[in-house]
Length: 193
Image (cartoon, rainbow, N blue to C red; front, side, top):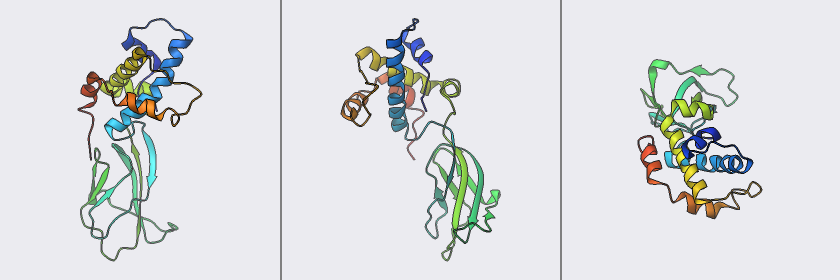
C-alpha cells in the first residue's frame, strides 16, 4: 500500500498543475518510497487481516506474530490436532497484547508436554488506504510526500518497465540518502521490537 496519494505529494511540492509526466513520475516514486518507509519503520503500513500459526517454545510465555502494530485480535485458538476439528479458544483474560511489539503474552507458560498448535486471527498495520494514512498518521504520510518530492527534485527516474530488482542498486543508493526532515518525522514512529 502507498503511504500517500499523488495529490498529497503535489501539495508538498507546491505543484498545482496536472501533467502526465509529473503525475506518472510521482506515481512511480510513491510505491518505492512507501517500501523504504516500511523498512525504516520496521513494519508494514497496510492494515490487513492475517491468520497465523505462531511457533512457540515449550515453557515460553510469549508468541511473536509476523506483523505489527497489532490493531486487534479477532480470535486466539488452540488445537491438539493439525486438522482443527475441535479448537479451544484461549480465554481473553489469560493473555495481553503488545500491540507495538507484535506479541501475545500469556499469563502462564506453555506447558512442557504441549503438542498443540495456536492459531491467531488478527489485524495489523496502520491504515487501509493512502487517504486513511494521510488523516490517521499524518507524520508518516508527510514523510513519504517529502521523500517523494526530494527524489523528484533530484531527478531520480524510475522506469515503468524496469523491475525493482533491475533498479535495486540505484534505489538502494538513493534510499541511503534519506532527507533529515524525513528521518525527523519518522523517528518517533519507528519502533524496534
